[in-house]
Image (cartoon, rainbow, N blue to C red; front, side, top):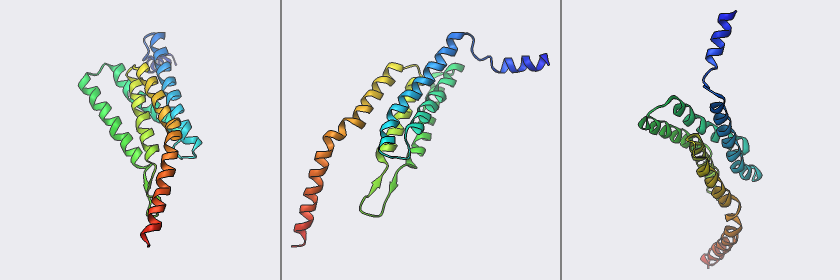
Length: 171
């Protein structure tokens, strides 16, 4: 029984000290919070990729970066890990984009871009660049929440101008 306990203890002994454990907890919690902030806007708009999706993407990206960093891989190997995360997230984002044959055209582009950016924020957190991740989240939040207040009047004007042009084309 003692041998089994020692094996189990050795399997869960990756943290050399309490400080290492705290760093892991802080990074993963921060990734979850930052991803959740970006996912909140998508959730409020009734999109399928909402809070939970963005939280998982951000935490997953952070973890994919943090684990190799903990093992001490070289910069060139880390570059390949980051490339893998980007490619994987690109595949996930492609699944959120839907091309419609009706008049609405394409949908899901903002959600895809949000997931992509959320993964980048997760990479920043995983690399220990928390300040950069927080700043990027704040800027993305402004794009998602503030920019629509300015772009809606432009979109409405553009739509009404387009309808006016359509009315005159039949004459």
